[in-house]
Image (tube, rainbow, N blue to C red; front, side, top):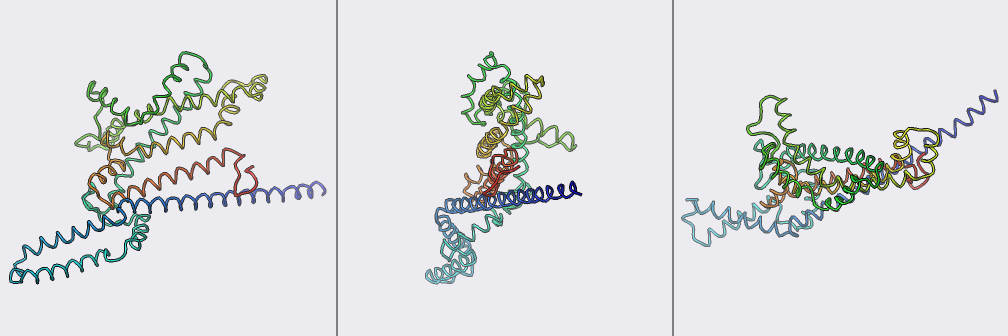
Length: 377
């Protein structure tokens, strides 16, 4: 009986501790999520103000309305019997009606908050110049078609970069001071150049000079009708852009992570593990890789954010039909709804990246405070 009562007394506090930990995790997640949402809202609102030039773009739209109506009335035979003053009066009335229909008669600050809500919900109406591949002018459809290719390219490149960097850094930490280690240290500054810079050289070598790989695009033209051949064509077109993503960061990332592996490899508990006869792989996995995991995740997340922002030029260089290339086209054509939509998409992607980093960081590192009190156990 005493043993049973003692076990029950020990079980109740354990349950309370578990419940408390879950509550702190939930609170931590909620606070971080709300913080990122506020950040996204502020960023999108600033983008709307910049994209509209503080209302200047709306003035341009009013001018376009006047010009369009003027051309329509010039070819209207019913207006030919009116005097010049009467035609101007009719034109002004029609311009006023059209401006009211577009909502341009209200103050810009009021309309800016409507633009903000429409931007956050991607309810941006029709694009002014751009079309989707299916011929739709709806901004939501245009963004929907371009998001999947961007996620495919960037996710593939980032996964390759992460795993190659981890294993290569472990390899270098075992061979500190070797020729390979010195080469990586010497090449680390080359990561200062963006991925699209290396993409240009890869195109020149493997597409223009050797002719092994395509210059750009996502699939061959015309696209293969067979689904399997279409997948193979897409994989072939991904080699150069994914390769440029990996090459642009591999040396600096490997050098950075290899340094942390070396620091933790010299700890006393690692020497104790060696004295116990643990294999080198087990020591690396348990006593070197696990302590450095929070730092690795943070470094990779920062690299990830940098790659998101660099996708605009990278996709333009490789003619990849993603959000980045769409952003470039929208800027060139000054298509405000599409510009705002792409900014919102990038804001969401960056916020999700940071949010996942916070959650993963809290899970892998027990020293991170959750919910303002206690630590994760």
